[in-house]
Image 1 (cartoon, helix red, strand yellow):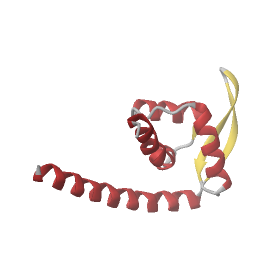
Image 2 (cartoon, rainbow, N blue to C red):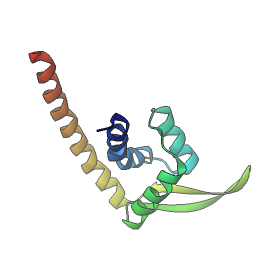
Image 3 (cartoon, one colour):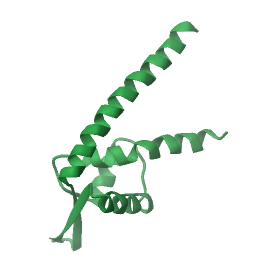
Image 4 (cartoon, rainbow, N blue to C red):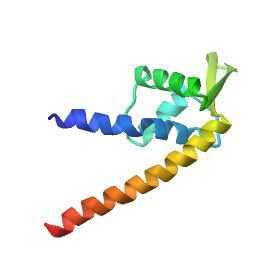
Length: 113
């Protein structure tokens, strides 16, 4: 098993949650979303994020609006829908529980060695 493949799968598993979290309380366009993820060391390329944003939109979790830009073409700003807000709250609960469980398991392993 290749370590890089496993690490990539772990990142992909939390990417949806991270994107929804970035959009909590504020609208953002793709470059802003990518910048936030990059700052957090979640390296994502445009080819990965666009299909994910489309899937989230088609699922009713996001919507978007076009806004003129002073420095180029219009920008598509994404925002959470009401369903997206609810979905994010549930994902946050699940993430918190998962994080606690993983911490318990990995600390037990470390403490018993």
